[in-house]
Image (cartoon, rainbow, N blue to C red):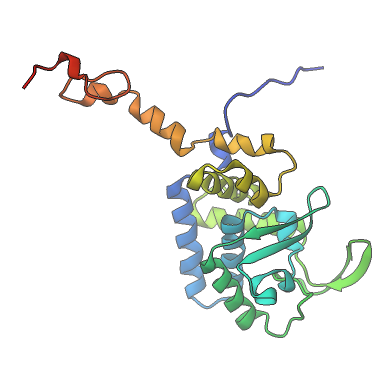
Length: 236
């Protein structure tokens, strides 16, 4: 049996989107949605929720209109029965809240509050939800996964749903380096899971890396942390 190798530090670099990749992805879905295609509008909504709310793919396909700002009027998403049978509230930006309300008003106006936010193009099917078999038009996990992959390919970005979640987690942590808020947003059972994002390209770590050779690029003699070494300067 092969012994599993240990890993230090944060996520592998290919597990999250760079700023340039995220911009390219957002610009692509925005431009496609401007054409008026319903499919393109739905694709844009999917990418926005994955990037700005950090939902798991399994949580997005189960998301009901009633769980969104279009249903309860708050700038939040209610994740019902998430991973580990844990419910949680995800606070979302007002911009995403407005987009969800607009999406429901224009593209899901005939749907009931208990209906899926993102509908399947394949039509209705029978789905077992929390032990109850119901008639639903929700996407399957596989359909969402491959749809996101295709969106990424069209945008020139290697993409899958959980890569968006990793990106959301890193951005959330970097705002105030609040591990417990990030944990709540992601719905992690253990804070140790969340700390992985604190070790991945965080602002404080990036600052230390960039400051490492700062003294070499300055004209004045500096000490090891980049401050002026006044002891070597002449008195005025």
